Length: 168
Image (cartoon, rainbow, N blue to C red; front, side, top):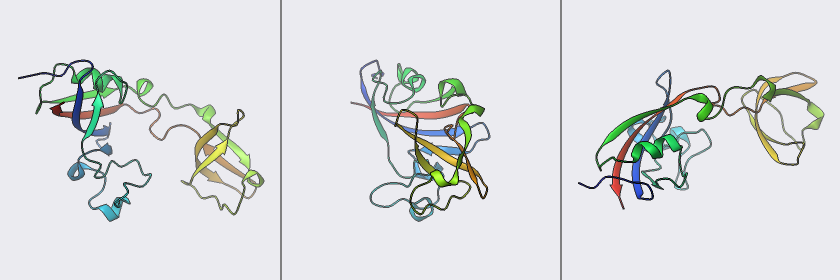
């Protein structure tokens, strides 16, 4: 039976979990972070922004093209269709270490429009270099809003259960 090698286009299923076993992303609906399409915000156009893979279906990637985490792509080398593997990626190689300096406060009057900030709300701010910075509101006072620019999974090791479905 043929095995996957660098440069091969492959089809995989995966489930990404955190250290506590919670699923943060998957291509398999049954093991996903939602029980039905309505619950996780899925519709005919895909999923909402909750990080859930919902019912995206198997992923196609080219091994070595950096379409996914390099550790996952490396693990696919030598696998045959139907084979499964588990790959754990340390925080620093996944979404980075949590950086306290990425938590900062801004004045409420810096917000534009009719935005009413709430804890957990995701905003896009303009950085010093005019590049957009995605942040999550973590505290709101009458004068300031404290935001966190770390990736939501920063500081966490992640584990992927991968299954090679097909080599194209």
